[in-house]
Length: 317
Length: 317
Image (cartoon, rainbow over all chains, first blue to last red; front, side, top):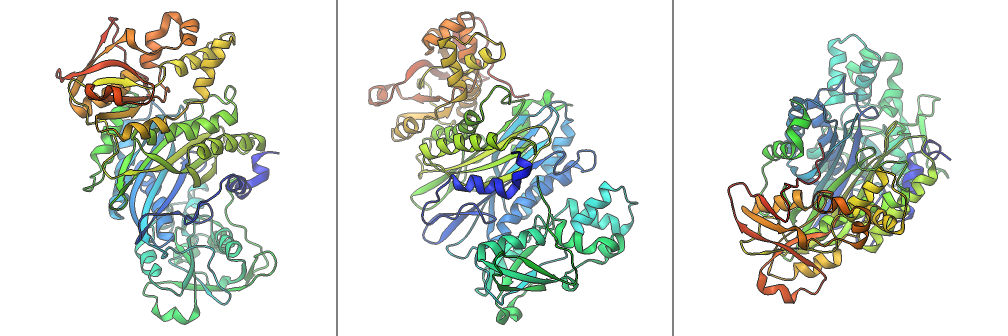
């Protein structure tokens, strides 16, 4: 059997089976692992790899944008648990004939993002790869003991909420790949693709509210990511497609493909969270209610109100 | 200017300049970063990337060996500071048509090493890469506050010591690349290349002795690695080539290339440390004295006693 037949989640399941997690530690299955630090604080750790050809095309992305994005998508994992970013570690494999200016710009974008969110670059590894750029970032964060928001804590009747708009990043990527004319709308979508904003401030505010039950960031689209919450929490859900927050720019550029981009495009790096309906008025950040958590219907599925399509989310293999 | 003209250390210097390290934290320049944990303990973090074609050839290395080695070279960085390994995070980019058996064997070797040294696999990232396997491991460890051994603390008159033998791994790699007949000696060198043993027990013992001044692990060969200690500590050194610990296997297979392999081959993953001569009899692990720390001679150079060659160590670019 080939890897593509097992799929990403099959692979993660294989890896999970070989590891036994000590008491007091949360391992594979959330946006970050959680390790005890002292009696007051816990350490959050997450890691993400970006490979040329799979995650970006060198001819399209500016090195400064790629540097920012490499840091941002990792810091987003700390935001997803409601943590405070602390430090990053950058491993990078580069072709020996790459221009040194490329590296300078990459590091400049990377450092800008780290500085903005307080995640100091503390180490890493530099090595060569004949023909491809490969980047891995590990991020450490911190949060008060027991305050990290998990995927496994959604409750029946919770409202399902998201920050920001969905689908802009995927709409920007589609515009790049299909060589769309660079209208102002199109440029804004592309900017959203290359310059994701980790929701650190929002995550920290949400982490302080007890009625926020489950939380994660949206990296593969809600169709895929919400399923992680449903499976971990053993519930199901309904999503009202008419309620999805969709930008005017996305409506203008891709009117025929809105629901697919907004549910399955991925790389939004917005927060997806479930709340006790009674706390809705105590949430002090902009957000949109898009659905409801339902009792488990045997296989943790999502009912899409407003379409017969079953959206699947982005697949890595 | 191209990356290959700047070199690995030029690149690291560029990265270092963009980051400002908070008080109480040690960042780029040692085997691990050190972060405060609580009043008693500190957290150690290190990360390493292995790229197909640069670090290994898929046709030569067995996936189980590669899994072991990916974990071992990272755990070795914790050993290098005298720390206790705690957790690892594995990012891996794989071609979609890779056989699932390959992955199973890789994970089996990886887990075996993690389990042996107490470094639980707590998370990671799985993604695709069309034609190359790319692996990144981040390892976390812990040590009592102030007990981590650094590169910057070597003192004039210290004896320079190493654990184990030098050059076996490089001799094994050379045997693979040059298709040497697989004699018993040759097989043992190749085993040393594919199955490095992180010196965790030895590092922990050495970390308890105050007279151990500087310490690191040998990944690029002492010719390169000792220079890091010399530069950080602002000293120079002499190494007596006749004292280098060289195995009978290496002497049998590569009699004409011993000094080059032992000083510049790399991937030994032995410990390199400097000691106050007065504590030599309190060291309870096997080790060899190979030289002496001297006052700085303006450019932190190594005098090689027994050869006119200036050995340089392994270069990544």
